[in-house]
Structures are given as C-alpha cells and as structure tokens.
Length: 447
Ligand SMILES: Nc1ncnc2c1ncn2[C@@H]1O[C@H](COP(=O)(O)OP(=O)(O)OP(=O)(O)O)[C@@H](O)[C@H]1O
Image (tube, rainbow, N blue to C red; front, side, top):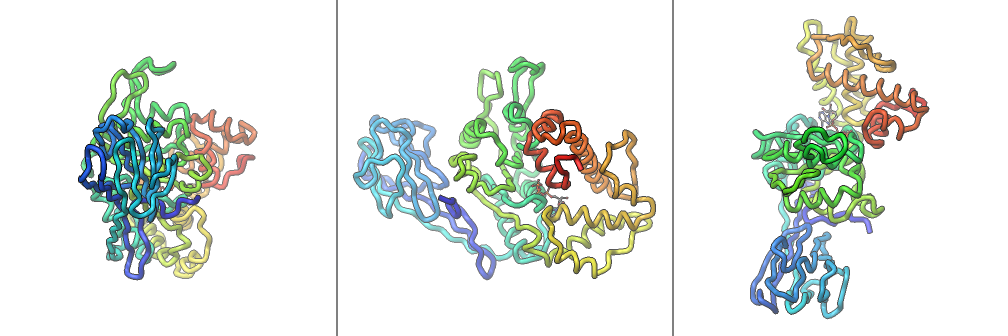
C-alpha cells in the first residue's frame, strides 16, 4: 500500500491556496473503569494501554501495558494490536491489524470504546510574500510552501521536508527555526548520510568516555547540543534500519541515553527531518520503519523542484547576481536572453545547480576570476586564494564544493571506482559519496 495521504495532517492544493486537513480520533469509553468518558486523540499514532506512557491510560488490569495502537491513515483508523495479553477485538472480531469502520467498537480486556474520526479543515490562503527566510520565489507553488512554513514555524510538531536535491530543504529548516519561538536557541544540523553507520548513534546521542574502543573522551551528541532548540536531521532516509527504533524512542519520549551511560537524559528538542527520497515508498520496501515515518511526517512539506516553478528563475538569478554587486567592479548583469534560455534548461540539481551556474557565468566575466570558476578537477592546493570581492559565504561554499569534488575524484581514483572503499577512506557513509557523485557528475572512473 502506498501511504499517500496516510498522515494525520496534510495539505491539499486549492485554487485560493491550500487547505490543511487534519484528523483526530474521538474515543468514547463504554465499558471498564473509564466508561462514560470521552477523549480526543491526536495522530498520527496513539497508544492505548495501562502503562502511563500511553496516550490514553486505562487503569484496568486486563489491559496490557501498551495494548493497542491507533493510527490515522487519511480517512481511516487503523487498529494494531501490540501483542496484548487478552487480545484486541474490533466489532467482535479478534484482530492483529485491521481498519475500524465509522463507529466501530474495540474491546481491550474488560474495557470497550467506540471510535470515530473527527475531521478538521483549515483554509490557508497563499502567502503574500516572495520569500521565507532564505527561500526565494513568487510562484504560486512557492507561495503555497511559504503559507505552510509560516504556519508550521510557530508550532512545536515535527516537520518532514521532502524534495529533490538542491530544492532548499536545509534553507527551509533554518528558516523555520529562525521564525520559531526557539530562534534564540541552537539550530543543529546532522546529515545522516555523511557519517558512517557505526558512528551515527554516538554522533546523535553522545557517548561517555570508554563506551567503545576509541572513545577516549565523552561526547555530547547532537540531541544534547540542540537542547532547547531545533535538530535538523538531513537525509533521514539514510538512517540505518537498526538505529531507527532508537530515534523513534527519542522522538516519542524526548529521552536519550548516551552510549555507555547509566542514566537517561531528558532533552527538549524540536525535530525537522529532510529527505530527497519518497519515504512512503521506502516504508513499502521495508527500508524505513513505518512507525518512525508516522512520527516524522506530523507536519509534511514538499519543496517543489525548479522545473515546477521556472517562472521563479529570473528572480533567483537576479538575486544571486545581487550577491556579487558589493564588489567595486561588478560584472555586467546576465542578458535576459540567457535567463529565458535557463527557463527551458533541465536543472536536476535544482536551485543549487542554478546558483552554481550563475556564479560560474559571473566569475567568467570577472577579470582574474575565471580560473577560480573552472578549477575543481584536480587536487586542491594548500594555499587558498581569497577573493575579497566575492561575498564570504559565496566564496566559502564554492571552496567547500571544489574541495569536496576534488576529494572524491581522488578517492574514487585511488579505490578504482569502488564507492564503498572510497567512503571508508573518507570516513563518510556510502550514500554521501553517491550524493557527491550525483551532485558533481563524477563517474566511478573519477572524472
Ligand atoms: N528557493 C530558494 N531560494 C534561494 N536559494 C535557494 C532556494 N532553494 C535552494 N537554494 C540555494 O540552493 C543551495 C542548496 O540548498 P539546500 O542545501 O537547502 O538544498 P537541499 O534541498 O537541502 O539539498 P540536498 O538534498 O542536496 O541536501 C543553497 O545555496 C541555497 O541557498
């Protein structure tokens, strides 16, 4: 089953902007210690049981600690028995995993309750802005995105940003944080693809000294670093399956335990996750845990690829040009004809690729800068040529990109194009090497 729309909150495009639909589960207790009481459970998942960590706690000894899990999937309520002692019955049929009908009755031990879906719909008009933080564009698709981001920024829920490479997921995450009540607290980025699988746990949750061979000192971990602020988990689709339960626990309880530590730590962290894979498909292929997916996709946002908003290209190009204008001899602006041509160019690397292209064209027009723009193929020299005319962050990003490209060309050459060995050599994950290869068009031969 493809889990399209199988979320508790999801945006639907409308002519005037979008409509944000969300569902809650109405639970009317009809038998047992809570009989007569009514509850509303927010999605995406709600656990019911006698344990105090459940969303609905039933003080009934015939009910297991975590007895059943209710999941909102679009218009349906899915009922999953959590290996309970006395079983779960939906309309008198014992089930392991079933969909409830409207007004279905579920029975857990000596307790029974009636379930109904409550539907909420909020119309969200298009944003009037042509940017959100560092994200630019005034196309309708982007103004829909801003409308959602403006709304989600002030909430506490976990945001899942989906979109192809270079569509601005990291920029969006930083902007959400910058508009949130947590803005004066840390914004910590962790790229799940950039760290070898065996180090991810200690990178995320920290470790005490001596926790494993090589752990000579203790390490805080990203969760603790982000305490009070926001943790951005980039490339979440690359998180190894075996670590996913640990992240799920951290998301559910906001409690972490560093490797080798004897006690848990409570952390106050908002999570924003991003992926350029379709996580719903990953779930279907059993490469990503379904329960974690539901925890992450509480507030989902899809960043559109550049080809869906080519009308934004001139605005973006002029913006990237402007970043160069602080120099004494600014280059001539790119002619409109080039901008027009750019609208029909495929941009698999999206805005990042567009930005790089603009910078390349501009630097070719700058006296003495052509070499900088064209370099990147060979090993970088140890001396760094600083061009003070180029804004700092532009120069820095270019240098990082050049270094990354040159590094992996060399790593692939030395390993005869073996991606796993190149990743080992670089002490990064395989997925990161593949991402760099795709981004820079590097082949296994290292060209
Ligand atoms: N809408 C936008 N407006 C302005 N700049 C943008 C926009 N989208 C992306 N960029 C620029 O493109 C570059 C890449 O953006 P970012 O790193 O946020 O993309 P991403 O989706 O996280 O990519 P990846 O999946 O490869 O990590 C940055 O230089 C960023 O400034």
